Picture 1 (cartoon, chains in turn brown, yellow):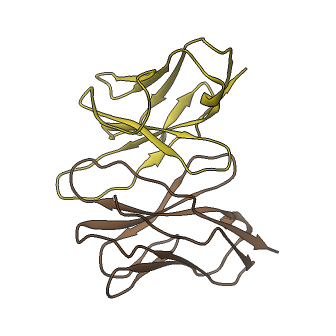
Picture 2: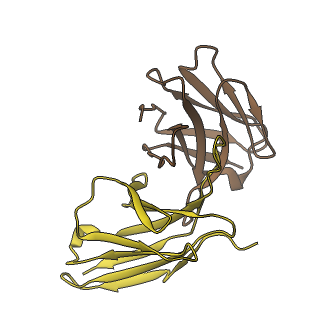
Length: 111
Length: 115
């Protein structure tokens, strides 16, 4: 699976928007971009995924660059509960492919 | 709707022993994957089971084995435990209908400590 690059850590203030970047310059045409987050002492939690178009759900928005070599996870109003490690993962849409996690971005939210 | 259930939540074993971890997938999910997460690192894929067979495997030795039962639940077995096997073991379930991409649902994990 293609590799992703994320900043090790980011900080945000409560109730402000947060933009978490991810670079994936070697993405292939069949790779979906998935985001998961892991709260302290819990397993990873699915956030959002997309292929080419921007996606929105109740948790977040996913903005995908036109060339698909990068993407940004957007939390519109950060809360203290959003403090977690966020993982950007590429997953091929062929068969029952496993997820390959990197180190992720540790997001700290200040009150 | 229950999510993924893992048992036990914590476990302490001695080097050389064997351990079995258990996972019940989310209702409606038929595929189970296991991950190992060392402290401060991202989860590492161990293997995946579908239709009671191992379908994919990560870079883990044969000491790690598994099983999937007809009700889709799964077990992870680790033989000859090493200190380095101390980690959080995560189970994830999914359902991948043809042509659709679905998210994985993870359990809260089993914390294994080898002493």
